[in-house]
Image (cartoon, rainbow over all chains, first blue to last red):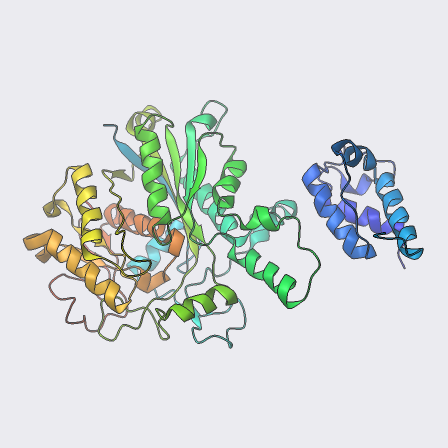
Length: 91
Length: 385
């Protein structure tokens, strides 16, 4: 089974317009050519892939700061998966 | 008043996916209407259409862009690219803000809407794809054209059912006359061949089950088609300054509304629109050699339209040719006006009047005008309506 990191990277590489193969967990999403609209589509795919619900951030800053790099996306997914595991999702 | 020239054409329809296929199809009296293939039509009573065939979106667009575009917008952009290439225009930073895009559609992103509703109501999906709204909005056609070609002038859509792209041509012309732009990409796109859309059309009871036979005895109604058409309109000054060769002049336009009924046609309304166009162009019926009829093949619509032309033309009706090219490509709804304008321009350019297909016997209410049955006619066409 693919790891969470691998699945996240695969989804991000599918939307990256600049050098997608070179994308790593440290890569800033902006440099990979992932804009705000692509990010919305990425969230949609993450929800499908991991059966999670990514909540809307309450502020614009939160959205921008929460997903600067591929690693941030993995952290977000891990957090939501842990919530789901402990049954607190949506609480 | 400024003179306006057409300097480029682009189109996709059941006759093929560029203007050359359009022109050849007309000359050869090709029938584009056939069995529906895009989806399983066994649940429909209407199983024929004028489909755009062999269109591979991936050959025209990057994957990332494709995800944001409904089929109707894809067709709009491909037709606009062809028209601009045909015109020889180079869109640079100086010209970009002086170009308008006015593109019509009747239904907008019908495939996206159908798919979304199926997922939502049929499969209990909890959410829809984030691009659902950008894909299905009726203005997606002109928006995508402007982004694709880097155009920054006035850009908007028109929607008035089957007149949508006719209105787009008229609005683009008015922008040029008003000096708000030097070039206008005008036309329309439609891709509404979906199960849901056809179910709706079925219920209107205006659809033919065998084929489209405008003005004919026993005509059973219309056949839907899909496609797109774009014309490059330019002011005379702009076209001459860059040495462009005009394909035709847009001499005049007229627009009105019956103000009566949502589907029933009105003879005075149709006649009035033609009178306004002729007056604007300072032409009389004697100057017109070809009329491209709306000719949807509905019993009442054809009868009233035929009557309107006959009354307007008077004695000149004996000399004019009139055909309905919907018999070849079906009814393109919001793209119909653009496709038919292109047919008319090709008729003038090539000296070939396109035929009305499937017209074995004109009905009793359609006698006294040459409807160009079955085969194209070679002749000089000075002006078309």
